[in-house]
Amino acid sequence: MQASPDPEHPFVYPASCFVTGTILGSTVPCLSPEQQVYFHQGYEPADHDRHDMAQLRQTFGIATHF
Image 1 (cartoon, rainbow, N blue to C red):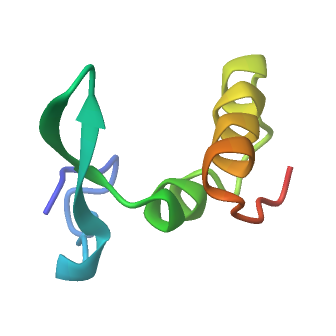
Image 2 (cartoon, helix red, strand yellow):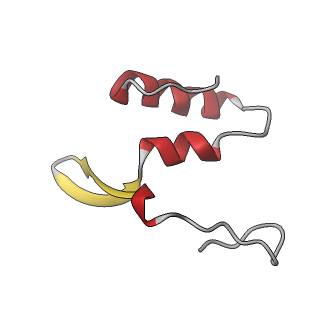
């Protein structure tokens, strides 16, 4: 669970969204690409959001909405 702007409705992550990745040869815990795309919905994206989605498309071949 993660706190949200509405304390009565925290973000609840499904267990399947937790995966591992690799940064400079080290294994690290992270959120799946699909979960990252899911959290980038429902708002007008900033330039850094567009960059993040472009990276997910390029690296994982995943479809994004912007």
